Length: 139
Image (cartoon, rainbow, N blue to C red; front, side, top):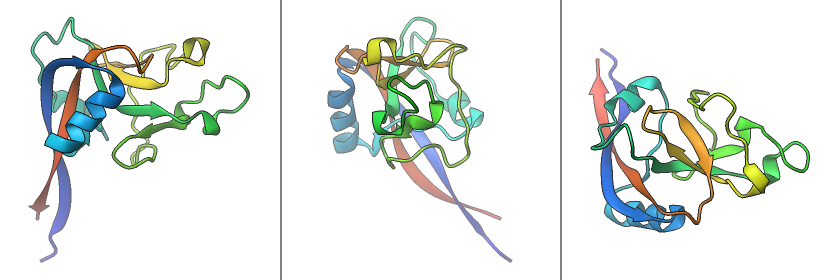
């Protein structure tokens, strides 16, 4: 009987405000990295206090080298900090009209209170969500 190895992400909301880079460092030291989402089930497992009001950094960062044109709006230029790659499943949950890279300054991603993704200035401080990967066997 074949067993399939799957990776389940366990999410940890951090009730501190930091810049995206500081949040990433914190997550890499204490967990695995900033949160990565590969499907809606991952988003649904995300439990945060103040869900309606607290935007929280996640592991999305934009790669301007991947832009098409001087100020691209290509969602495929966004990479997960844990892998440096786009989504393996092509799953995206961008708020309609986003990412918009306002003035080319919004290069970091966060999850909104309604669980949409949005882009914002990486130097701003926000709460954040880390993940820890855990391998599970499924029959």
